[in-house]
Length: 124
Image (cartoon, rainbow, N blue to C red; front, side, top):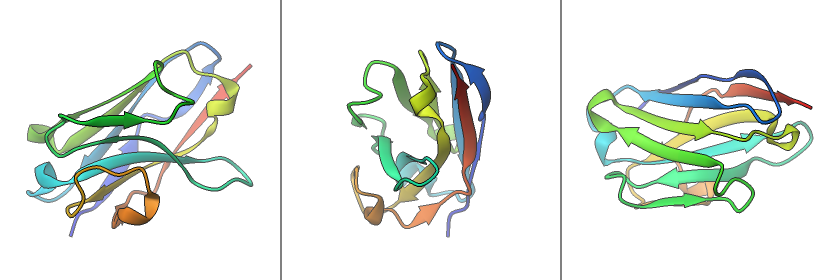
């Protein structure tokens, strides 16, 4: 069993930056793939980024490529999402998700464990 807690969200102006953190309980977190997803009001939850257990493989949605960077520190049971050059369309609740059975995945259905989310609001 893994519990995930996101933090780092907030209100920022367009062009600004935020760093989200996803902290996990459980000693085996280092063997889990982790994904970040987001959900804006009235929209489906969408893939943002994912990282393999080792950090050796990373993936990004086209909409965030070049602006967002995912990384992890397994010694701290933490995965980060550095978000730069934020746009109003990045406004959403951001969720991290983890799963021990996939190498890395863009599909939200592949992830077993989810956090409660953190709100990111980008003003124009």
